[in-house]
Amino acid sequence: QTFATSPRLGWPWQQKVMLPAAFEALRSKHVAEVSTSLGRPGAEVCMQYQMDSRNATSMASILTCAVMIARQEPRAPAHLWEVDWQALGKELEPPEAFVQNLKETAVLMAKGDANAEMCRALWREMNRLPQVWQLAPEAALQPQDLGRQSPELAGLETLRFCVKAFSEMAAPSKEM
Image (cartoon, rainbow, N blue to C red; front, side):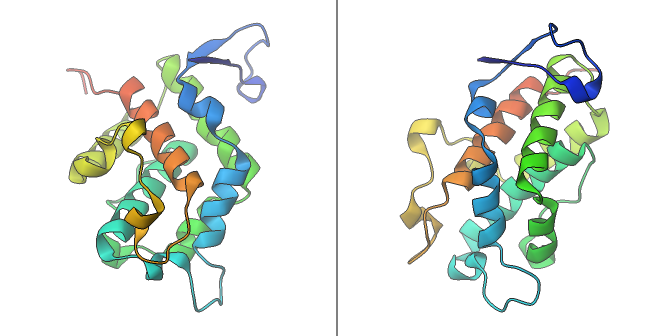
């Protein structure tokens, strides 16, 4: 667990909220690494084409959930054949702002003030691919799990831990 504050949300600097440790580990370099792996507009090659469809599906789900949280808005399920990888990569830019937004939404969730519709969409996406979200930190995705000749993406795994930690804070109640 770590303490976080959010001056952009207008809270006094003394007011602190406990956040899961996954958010402490998240850095803009993690997000930049993932964004770069998705390719740039006009590029013909991007990392997800090196993966098998099972792992590309996992990547799409993790990134869609992270974007949902950072943007505080529900998204459609991340069906592999519908994912616009370059648009998804743009959603991660700039990495510093994306990380800040992700952490601020986590602060809102810890305060009980997150977007309920977004939380429901997050749970629907996570329940669609439970095998992605059930892995414990000691069972982290390994580079070989991302497909042959795929680079290690520590940033993707760090984002997965943040999404999972957020979802545990956002567990649906009977009112949802």
